[in-house]
Image (cartoon, rainbow, N blue to C red; front, side, top):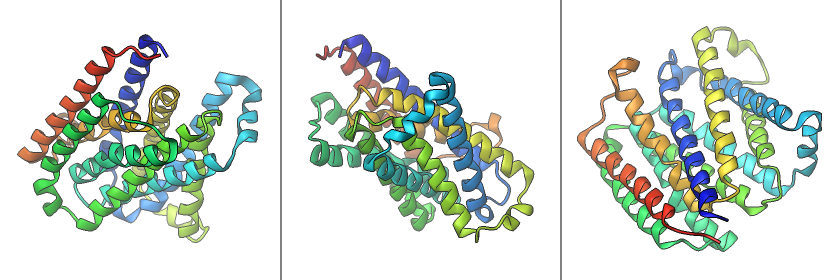
Length: 297
């Protein structure tokens, strides 16, 4: 792999994390969000699967269905892990502050690195390891106070979401020949089926759901699907830990969007969150700079 290809993958995955960062803002606009979690998950999962199928159709034409004939164990497993991440994110962010949820997700690179090493034999580069240590230091600072002010259960579910996404990242690296978008489509379908199951296979719970929540869930599906397209493209070229490290921009961006007055949420982060977020951002910038200096073969 050439250096230009590596830099391209870096930019694409960085953009994926930035796109995903608007998800927290979308959830914050919901009315009585804690009462409509499964309805929201149903619509969002359906939107994700539909958008990705449409993308495959425009990219490959009517032969796009052949991707689904190649679904294997890794795809199903990855779909379950990603669906877990989808579900955990919504539950966590409706139970605690956006900062706590988002920065529990910052555990992704460490989980992905450990699992990637034991399952795929992926060895961390020195620059990646240094960036991860810096990012971990930033995470510790960020949750120093906010983990106390938020719900401990919400924080724990946020960690479960991070674990699910990290394991999904490993699965799409596990079998490179398996079409990656099919895994994401399965995740959306699994998420919708699970939500519908919890709702008793009935559409009655959807009747009283505010229209704005329905629109927001579909918008969130578009945000997630767009990020997944970018992330899956980058996954061809970057190891699991590096993929998860770059996706940390979701955490930093998400905290900023719910903080900025222009968006009307005004969820003001503490000084430790600002400091920790700056350190995480610095870690990602350092990683990008170090990677640009590395010529890979």
